[in-house]
Image 1: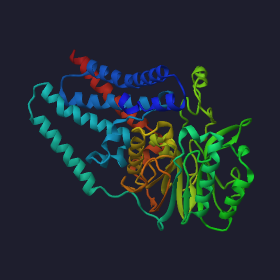
Image 2: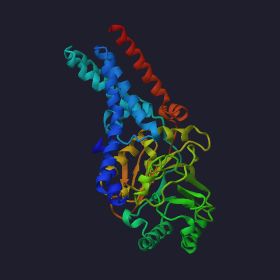
Image 3: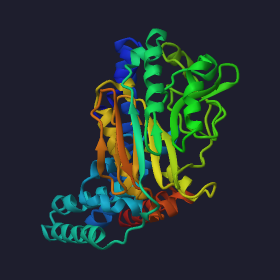
Image 4: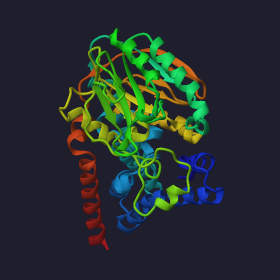
Length: 446
C-alpha cells in the first residue's frame, strides 16, 4: 500500500510543510488503515474456508470485494489502489462495462484463488487447466462478440485542453499569480474549436480577490462566438463559504459566478478540502490555502456544447465510478456523452500519482464507454476514447496546449444501468450472500 500511495508524503512535507517525521508517520498510518481492510478479508477467508477449492475461490473473491468496497465507502472512502486499475490493457478489461472496477477485482481474485488452491490442496493440475480455459474463453467472447453499448452521437468536438504547469509552491504566491493568470487569459481568448478547458483551480483566487478588468475582456470574447469553456475556479466568498468548482462559460456568461453552468465538487478530499472531526489541529499544522470547502450536490447536470453533454468531475472524484454512474440515470439532463476531468496533481510532484490517475480515468472510460478529456496543471492532459485508449496527450510537467478531436457517445452500459440507481450495493449483497453460504458449509463441516 505504501508503494501505491506513498506520494502523499510529497504533498504533506514539501508543500504542506509538515515536519518529515510527522508527514511520514501520517502516510504510514493511512497505509496501515487501508491495508487493514484486506487483512481482515484474508482473516475471514482463513476462518470460513471449506478446503474445497471451488468454494474457497468464490469465498476469496467475495471477501476481496467486500474489503475493496469498504475501503471505497467508509469515512468518505479512499479507493486509490483498487486492484482493477492493474487490469487496464489486459483481457480482463472486457468486464468493465458489465461489472465496473470492483466486480473486475472480485473476478480477478476469484480466478487467482482458483488457479492456486488446487495446488495447495494437492488436487493436481486439471482444475487449474479448467479454470484457465474457461476464463480465457469467457474473456475472449466478451472481447470478440459482446455488442457495443455506445454509439457515436453527432459530430466530433474540437477541444483545446490547457496545462498551465504552475508549480504548487508558486500557485498561491501573489507575485507568481499575475503571469500565470495572464497566460491563462490569452489561451482562453486564442483557443479555437468548440470547447477550451482549463485545470482545477486554474484561477486560484475567489472572485472577490480578482481584478474585474482581468476577466471582463475574456468574457466579452465568448459573447461573440459559439465556443464554450470549462474553467476550474473556487467560487463563493470567505464569509459565505466557497466551493471547488468548474464554471461553464458561453455566450450568455456575464461573470464568473453568473455563468450558465456551474459544477461544484461533491466528493471532497479529507484534510485537503474538508476537515474531519477532531483533526483541525492536524490541518492547522499544514500550509493549506483554501481548505474546508462546501460540498456540492451528488447528482449534477451536464454542460451542453455543440450537441454534446459534458459531465465534469474534479480531481480524484473520478475514483468513484458509482457516483459518476448516478449522473447517467438521474434524468436532470440527458446522459453524459463525454466525461471531463480537471485536476491539479502538482501537490504530488513528479510522483507515480500522475500515471496512476491516468489509469483510473482510462478505466472510467471503459466502464461507461465514453471518451474522457482531461485538463491538468502538470499532467496527464490527455484525450481518452470510449475504449479507454489514449489518443492525444501532452508531456507531463510542461506548459502546453493540446488541440484534439473527441467523439461523443450515447447509450448506457450495463454497469451504468445498475450502478446509477443502486451504487455498489448489488455487488456487496451478492458477495455477502456468497460469504454466508460458504460460511454455513464450513460451519456444518466442522
